[in-house]
Image (cartoon, rainbow over all chains, first blue to last red; front, top):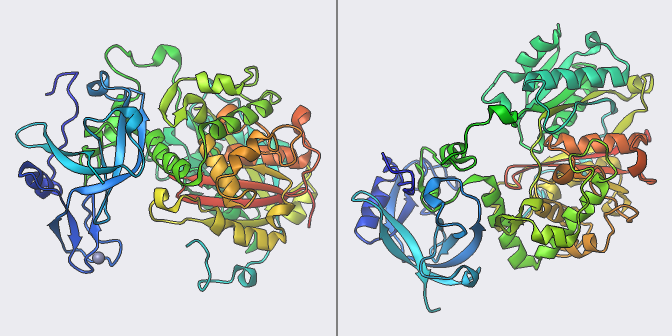
Length: 138
Length: 409
Ligand SMILES: [Zn+2]
């Protein structure tokens, strides 16, 4: 089990296994509906656009912009006790899907909606590499 | 994207239900521990029956909105029926649209009564999320709410992916929508604060309000601790133990009872779907159309608003959704005092969930009934012929509207 101060490491569920496998290899992927081509993340068992159940994983650019964000001050998990206040962002990828994530190497007061970002990968454990984002030139 | 054009013409299909709210029951609110969630529900129904001058045997319908303490009690309405000793009900349901449930239950009751399925329905909410101080879990090394939030962050599809980024709790999800709204429409932190201040002024006149004795200035608001920016703690609703109930019956029957009827002029629901941070609106634009059409009113006719206020932000969106202000201008409207005591459009006159008590959709409904009857004491507003009640659940996901009046039509 993790120590009290460790941040939660996501579970590599069957649904997310391809996502983490790609992240380990330095690629960002999202689900693509085989029926209508709609892209989605997080993975779901069916497409809410066309209701098809078949889907594949597709690599995306990793580029996008900050769609919204908040600055968390409350400690919900001991792993974040030393982190508050910290920002959680929603990145809207160029391809459309939105990802919940963090921005690395950016002061809190510089995080803004519309800021262009690109994916970076942070290794949490041998199994789990977490996609995060950093500022990029427009 | 929210007009229902091509789907239905509400104006053609809707008709008024001749139903009214005849009874109101509100238990003690806040840090009260002498009952369970079931006990609070029973007490609220007992008080509502007494208020209406009805007996338990007069009830033939029971609708329950279960708060979090009910857990996954999928047969909550039946549990409550047994606790109340009610026999031979002809309508029962456990209803959950989050904060939109209370007004939706009143609608369901009115429809059932209008259709002749039943005559007299109790609509009930209760919850008991707060534990007595001596029964709280030790906080040593265990930050507030961590276990629940951590569990909630797990879903079959994503495991605890969100938690890995530090995303926990409902406040954060609302903050994302609010921040986006502020960016797009120019709503400011002062605008959010204006709602907290205006509602506190009302609460200071409400004996049932948890913040009755605590005045609030905009400076106090800005000095209050952050929970999750853009929300200070004073942007977020209270947490309350307690119960609330209303009795709905036919307009004819209500006229013969103890209290003046509060007539249901109009009602509607709207559940927009999709991503609330893209929609940047509640379901009000959908829900208001049938409600206003059947009531024969427009936004400018509304004299009093009791709006769902899980956050200060929610009040601003809702005011704009109903057309009281253009997008982005509700904050200035509130800051100018129009929604505060003596303002031209009183809003959340009991203090709302921000400053009085948190009974989900029952909070605005309870205050609407008191005001419509003229029973609101020191905070009674003079103009109360057209009262708007809104309910909002999820992340601006579900919405219900009632137009209420002390006048039959
Ligand atoms: Zn599809």
